[in-house]
Length: 381
Figure 1 (tube, one colour):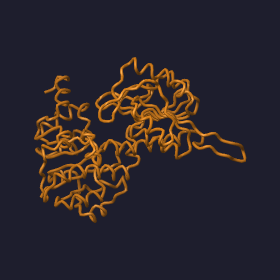
Figure 2 (cartoon, one colour; figure 1 turned 90 degrees about the horizontal axis):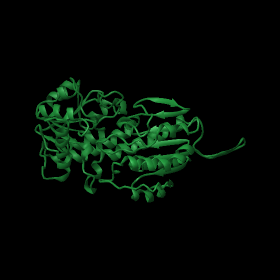
Figure 3 (cartoon, one colour; figure 1 turned 45 degrees about the vertical axis):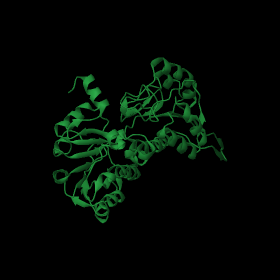
Figure 4 (tube, one colour; figure 1 turned 90 degrees about the vertical axis):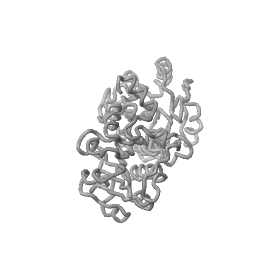
């Protein structure tokens, strides 16, 4: 019987857990044994007793779980140390978010441990794998939280109000990037009563923006990408887009930026001079702050005020909605892992395009072509 271990996340500020109790119950039904570190779900609102009621077994500490585990499930990729890479047994299967194209040293460290590793952030974006898509589920949580942070930082109401003291006009919100996070931000801002504009370089999202009540700002700069992502834009392309958007940024009370290109530094969409033109009291929430930032002035995991504009660079927004974000992450993970579990044993189908697409390492050997190329380009093995 394979043992699946869910450790308590060790990254600073991480409140999520890889499996909520409902997912533990689902995986136990396959015959696998579920081990959960004591307190793993507390910050997400899930007590140990809930995991035990779902069929899980509580282990006192990380070492006890890692020593037994054949499969380790995490939200964040493991770091070096006694509760991370070092703790993994040789030959274990690791399933987590990983960002392998930008964390090449971690890939090499895992390879030395002969680990089989699946990066959930590499799951192919095909119809069959939608229920496994952690990028979409966590972006949903992030887009929602970005608007709430903006609303609490903005020194005015979001909705229009008719009061005895007169009419309060609605806040103006500009969302830059209309992927999953952006669309959730648009919908949330609309529910709060704001007037919402949105922009994106992908032509297919205009209808989606308008369907949830947003006004699409057409910059004339359009470029579709692969897998639902925006393509990496060239400098001249971005300059022209910024020129068109400058007036909209200046008029906005809130700007929420969401633009990311997988494996690359986030594109700069809001320059310092654009921030200077914004009204005092305005707010920017930069959802790409952890990957360099869409705003030139953003600082990851900091809230700063520049020219009277509050710039929020929270890099882990889903962790602020830890309970529901964990439930969604756990269901994504369960949908990915469950087909591999047969009568309590791990039987990976290496012909399945979902498994192949998410695989980074197989028994320590790098099996992802893009990761191999990135390592070669960096001078790695």
